[in-house]
Length: 92
Image 1 (cartoon, one colour):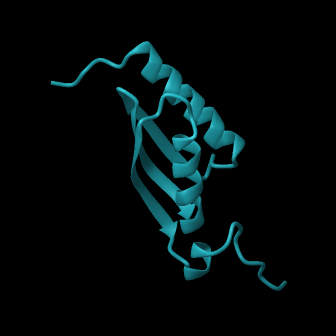
Image 2: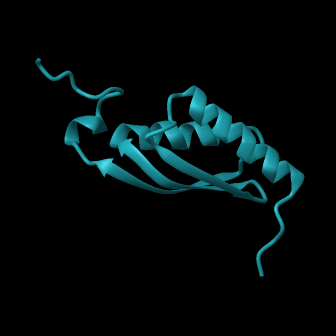
């Protein structure tokens, strides 16, 4: 049986959602946040590999978060993204 979301879980979801948006993880990324007892699950899609670490670190830094489970799907699996904080510049 699923436990009902508590007020603190709702607050955690709101804080993480706002923090992700502030870090630039918004459309076309579609990150869904669920919290149960301080355990957070991130699911949905991100554009690049480097955004995964950014999303998990952002969620982990929110007060009240005990653990973060990463279920994110990456649209573009470019190898450069593992070591960069921004997409490569393409010549015009």
